[in-house]
Image 1 (cartoon, rainbow, N blue to C red):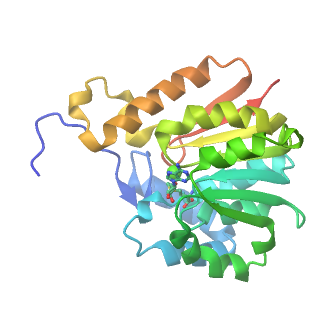
Image 2: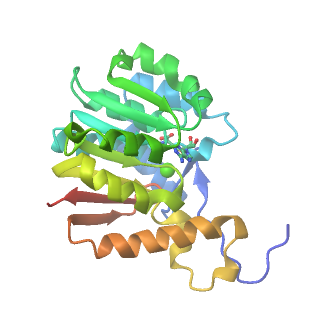
Length: 244
Ligand code: SAM
Ligand code: CA
């Protein structure tokens, strides 16, 4: 399809992954210097198993996975929630970063893609830490909140699913994650489209999530209950720490 003059182009994909970096060479440099040499073998295998998937661009970038692992360890995370699993790349980083008796509630509406990554998860010896639930995530969070014991019972959440529901997830996760725990929201720069002032220049398919993401970013910035950092890794990651 022909583009109209000035139409916004979402940032390119590199090595099957999204990156907002302006230089493809710089992204490659980061991966080859700091990430790939330290990426555990089962993660490499899972990434490669995802490489031929038609939706491979949904996979978390390896440098972001490495950052998540660092955050999980800094937060001493043991119990986590993941919304949006796909083939399990971010899930496996999480499973490898929490202790052997740690637990992840991993939610996705599609079990089929999770099964692509499952052999690598099994090989890594961490399947016992994962409770995969095939369901829309809101239902699962509401169910968890029916039990008062779950309030403040989790240390970390990674949200990487339907952008239009992020604020609904935030309201629920703020009850489930303990004070001092982390809530991480992915794709908060939405291919760079959040900074385009004229929406008519943005592809129609990107608009609903762009609007939701812009609203989310504004709401998080004024949410006094969290400390926050918007990081330009992958497609944008907003890291929040619950203050009270
Ligand atoms: N974190 C994953 C990774 O590292 O590969 C990528 C997740 S992918 C971007 C988004 C996922 O969210 C898809 O697998 C999709 O099935 C799932 N999803 C979409 N809407 C959902 C919902 N309402 N509840 C739970 N999962 C949902
Ligand atoms: Ca993502």
